[in-house]
Image 1 (tube, helix red, strand yellow):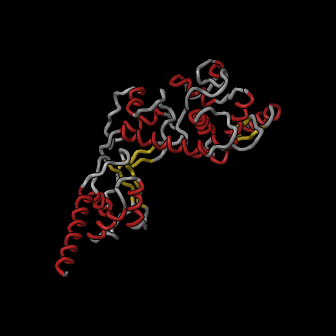
Image 2 (cartoon, helix red, strand yellow; image 1 turned 90 degrees about the vertical axis):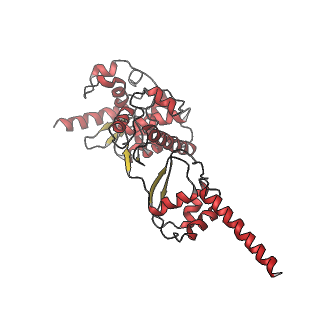
Image 3 (cartoon, helix red, strand yellow; image 1 turned 120 degrees about the vertical axis):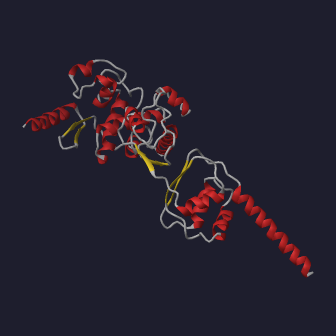
Length: 330
């Protein structure tokens, strides 16, 4: 009886050890490539293990937790931003998070930047492997498996951390995936009866809002003006789209002939939204485009202090223009 019990226990131990060894040393495919995750200060081993399981990086959390505890490293988990660019075994994963193999290089994309500015920042980043240097915009979109034909506005402005030597394609994929996720979430929770036929049209509006004001508190009102105009069939008449359409021909000053010269982005000569975004909108501009302020405003004019005066009628707007233009010349 005792021998049978001993054999049963011994067999059980072997099975557990075999399973643990298989689990610890078998590489798992990444949920996405690259796979980026954050470990917050004070996170417990159990929380981290569940995070990995939820992302399907590991099969289930208890084996990973047991593995780390077996090595006495449960209290050695380091907070920080981590990035994986190839499949990894649970053993290697636990070594990474207990050694603190956090990412050290970074690329910052600023709200309101154009795709051209974004590419320039990547090209000048010495920590990046430059795989897009000789690629056209359309070739880059193909590498990203994007359906759009214009890259403008498809990337979320943020700071992206990565291991030195990572391909710029991988960084662009992350920024593109982030924008799609943020836009998708905002679209799902959008206000009712907005004059957009697709999330892409909301993205275009968000990019205009981003370029029209640097004040976050004004963005819902700016969006409201343009949405009210769309509903009434009025032209948007927004300078940033005209400037974008001029491209390299813009000399830093917007002239009267610029407003009358027709381009696909001239919202003084063409009705509706321009054909693509004109910049990278941030999260606040996305929210404003999909949750505009409730107003009847159709016009706004800069006050000269970074803020704007909003008006419901042309007569009211003309008075505001005269007031603030006079103040600007004094």
